[in-house]
Length: 441
Image (cartoon, rainbow, N blue to C red; front, side, top):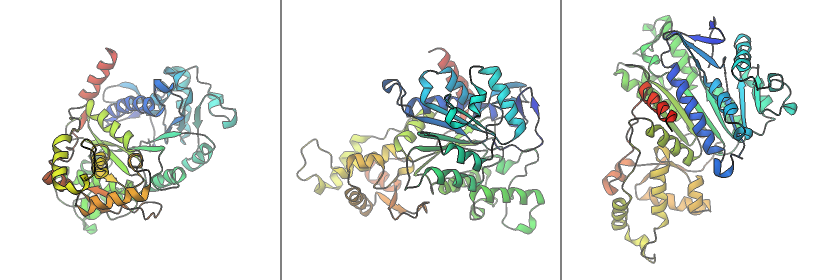
């Protein structure tokens, strides 16, 4: 998390006042780290042999002290270490990289490790990479310095967690992404970004809510500071016209998340905001960013299984019958039970692609049609029939590869396929229920 001075500690835990969502957020991240590693490591069937890494951009101390409840809980860095140590030796190929540039937090982080996980060799963890066999790396560096250091590591599939107390600057997103992804939507890198959504509109302590007007002359000094911070979040000022108005708070929250999601599409094909509701009127999001459709779909299913959200299950049989009636010409010459490539690709996008985003070099489309040009021709066919719309995310590589989104209104009207429903926020109760289920299994 991004830390603002002055800092206070209870023991080695950083004190967080007024952040009632902190425990919920940390609990969810702890659960998710185990879930993510279980998939990306190859799982038990492959003996977890794939190289993976969790990188905490600002690790803080590994413990959080929640002043409202007077309890000390593991922070996200603590959860990463808990996975690494307690799941050993299966986590041999998991690297945990903890970056913290605040000297005080870094000192407390080492104290937490000594107390909770004495088997971790701290001298080795913060020493030269070439002499580190623990696969735990402690870096008391600035972000840019740390990124230079970890460039020497074979990280494999890597999850970067951005956990700002206020907000992460867009320049930070660009810096990390540009070092990892040098080609069009390269896989192997995932981001999770924390956004304290409702606080932008309700405020908190010394943080003023965004103003409800574009008229700068009416802003207070505090509101101006918040607007400038939001400019840094987005990396531009274009968001202002959509958010700085007197619409209901829930509408403005939705607009902010959607606009931020569009900014993240510059580097990521799929962006999944998962909402959380720690208490009445409070909402924050953990936003998963990835270029691998299967992982994002698994994450959505994971989230839905732990909340009141139904798993997305459109009716394949009825939709296929409608598709066949509408396009009999592409079935000519096919055996009775064969599915045309146009349908197979369309259904794959419906079921597996977050937001219905696609292009001809998506991994699962290449499995159906290995030659990108042939895949492009099929996407063109779907676009001409109205199932897809061209979109321009302004990708980071200036690539001319065409990108599309499903036209859900056409799918609903013609095939009876409805858009996945909006996610209902996860609450503290949902996490508690899940934790109890773990303990009984």
